[in-house]
Image (cartoon, rainbow, N blue to C red):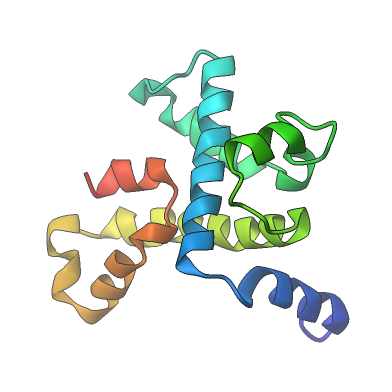
Length: 146
C-alpha cells in the first residue's frame, strides 16, 4: 500500500497517527463504546455476556463515516451533542478508529489468547500492552483486565 498508493497512504497516516493526544483517544474510545451501547440497546443485547461477540462484531462492521454523517445513525448532530469536546473531523475520527480497531483485534486475537493477564506485566512486551489499555475498547478491557 505504501508504494502502490503513496499519496493515499501518506494522507491516511497523517489523519490516523499525527497530532492525536491521549485525551482525544479517550474521547474517541468513549464515542465508539457509546455507539456500541446504542447498537446493543437497539438489538436487545444490552450488557448480557452472551451477546459480547455480537457487540464485538458490530464494532468490526462499524463504518464511522456513515455513523457520523448528517443522515447517518445516530448522525453527526446527536454525536456532537453527546460529545461536544470531540472536535476532530469525521475523516480523522474514522482513520483513527480504523487504527484502534486493528490494534484491538490484534491484541484480542494474538496477545490475550496466549497470555496470562496476571503475569502480563512481568515481561517488557506485556508491560507495553498493559500500558496501552487506554486504547482498548471497553468490552476488551472488561473481558481481560477486570
